[in-house]
Length: 299
Image (cartoon, rainbow, N blue to C red; front, side, top):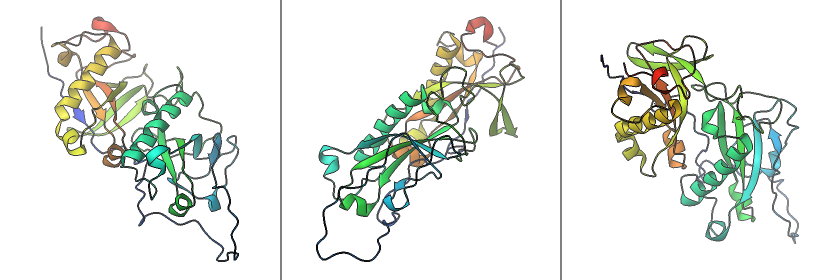
């Protein structure tokens, strides 16, 4: 049997966009005040945004003074899936939690659960971005403890800028969704991957989205150093996707291309690595999902 090693292509830190910015005092804008206050202020309940609303901008800090949701049938850039609240010791923090703090990461994890349920699949599997929206510093001081779980449609796998859309993203990743990642043709510059061009699986291609690897919780530096481990983990995802044995021959059936979270996303708690099957020695003209050993032979 003629065997070739299909090396992994790693696209580290490219094609990803931070969806949860830092929220320190230096970067947070204060809510606008009108400069006048009565001698005796009446207590008021803190502003809380609403779930099931859409917005003209993607933001990571929500201000009551600029809160202007629109009907989701109108063109918009972001949709609030749910509004949750910090509780317990997290609610007792003296300032808004940083996105890379334990409280911030826990909030993002809760948002991922809500967003994935809303979409009908893991948001990493499509042209989508998740944003954790936090209250401003003054709002937190005034008692606000909410956080928003927002989702947006993005331009492409490699350009994660939000694009305007009409209609809710509810169920956007159910089978047959046009937003779901499927087949791609890698575009190379010499031996380096430039980008993945989405193509129909019935067209000539060399790569296909296989699934998501949830990386272990460790430092960003440790994750970066373990490229071989991530490649091997993605091969396991590919084996399950194609229904081929996860054994010594797998490396001769396919290689991997993987898109990790950016450093900012990693620090905010994102551990989802997008894994793509890659074959460089032959052209595919159909999906290899469930194709078995005959559909993905060891070359």
